Image (cartoon, rainbow, N blue to C red):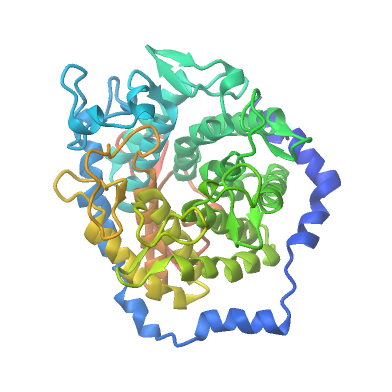
Length: 505
């Protein structure tokens, strides 16, 4: 059964492989004329002082950010659920469980979409929290964090996953809901987030089978040839960027390089097709922005800088994964133009939102997850364009100085333009749930160590002897300089691998 699942592909893949594949190379392979080559070099070299790299917050600072400033919020008893792994969707900003008879102010004054959902336990929240524990183990080797990640994976698989690859959006009084036709592709994708990171750490084959079934369910049942994209749900024809993009960040880009053939090639083809859809259906070359939904060129209320930078980031990563230099060049040339407009020099920070006329709202609030995506994209591109670190020196420090809750741990979901926290906004809910802050820390640690010519040290939990060819530092590649293998007390069939990477790209 495992073999048949592994080899099974989707209708989406077959259509791509046999009819569409050549188009993406022709249409997205940007021709680098002498003029564009010069522009690209200017971005890399203009007035850049390499010494700036040493001013980045160090890799050790990012480890401290995770260990001392984020994880205490996620390791208190109120975070773990009953049973452990049934992580609660909603908590108060001090980390305590919310009391329906005496709700904390941030719950009492929350937006209606939060207050109306307080009786629901969202799978996306549990998946994101599972990811948080996975990152904590990855960075520290703390076995307790891997135990908690396993508990989250087991709970989600047992209570939300269905035999056909569909997944409940939430549990209400323990009952999986809604009916399958009302489940959307974004929630479905995020059901795979924690599982995918856990598989990346452990190579647990049973977990991989559920990831494959999830992916096949989405690509077989939600691709609409009339729309030319993955649709939002079986009952909605909403054109949604996240229905496409979130397949990449939640499971495809992390898992694809770890798959055997022919599955790896099939998933790469699907990832390329997703990128093609994003560029064809959601990108405006006029504005150099991605529309979240609807028709490109419509209302700027459907555009933000977080989704735009995330789209460029994953176009670059898919290009790198598939050796498509045209896609890489597209992101490397166009994305810095967004950063140039988004950077607010007076505060050393990113603006994250646009005004109704499409201009950058430098006086608007800063949405934390968007800010994280912008930093992550910038950090990744800086490995080949280190001039971009001039932004990161400032934007990282703005984050650490203004967007971290040093009293009750974790981070604020949004701050004002000057960096003041927004009162009575819940720090966590179904979507704000640790994922973005911990991913930023992981990406910042890896890329900063690489930029400063220091080793990247990460921890895994492989069964037996693992092939070094499939060991990667998250979304990146690197040379393995050293590996140390030790026993894990509560994972008898696995060993802790402490891997030291150099030359991370």
